[in-house]
Image 1 (cartoon, one colour):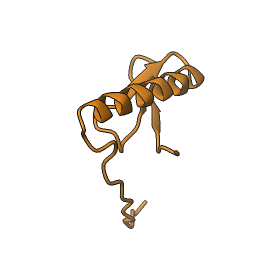
Image 2 (tube, helix red, strand yellow; image 1 turned 90 degrees about the vertical axis):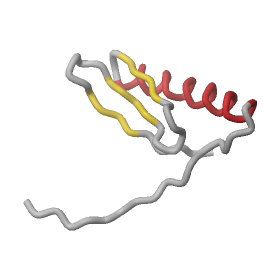
Image 3 (cartoon, one colour; image 1 turned 60 degrees about the horizontal axis):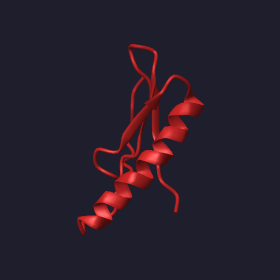
Length: 70
């Protein structure tokens, strides 16, 4: 299964990775590569917990296109 991921560098220099279709599923790392490895583990653990609690595994994810003026 494919999961969307957001990845950004925070004010302390850490890379933060989040899976927006799984509420509360985020992780971090000192490098992008480390953050991506860590979010994979976080996704697996979040899905396991949500399954045990009989919660939906993911929530709806939609994209909205907005015109942005420069």
